[in-house]
Image (tube, rainbow, N blue to C red):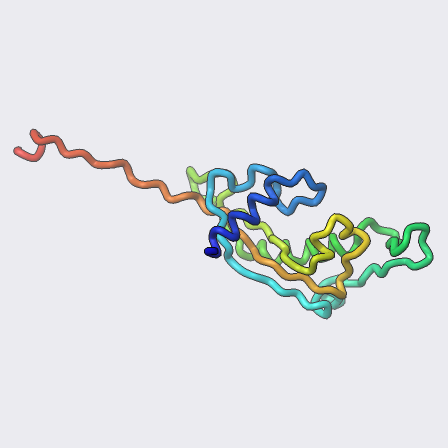
Length: 159
């Protein structure tokens, strides 16, 4: 399988999801453009937990009413922090939209590929910064438009 096919398959999967945490800004993101992988990332637990990155993990609370429930006073600290970190990184590959380009051209999204706990339906409970995070940054590029076909009339060629 080619890399472009794999990327298209991943984006199709995310577009079709009605999940609360779709990584796409909208189901129509880059619909009339071409998604292009521009970078990859692999954040170690140390990088995510560093004070410079604002990282403090929200461990599971063994004493909660739900097994492994998190109780940090904020909703989903680790998931949100990790998503914000990869979004900030991917934003460095954003470019300004050129005149007459599609609306999404130049915009960049992160597509997380690991760990599995980040991608699971129970990521609120299961994901912690101690697991790291990896994936790719994808930028929407306008599809190349072929120039209008030039026609030369016979009369113009005989002048």
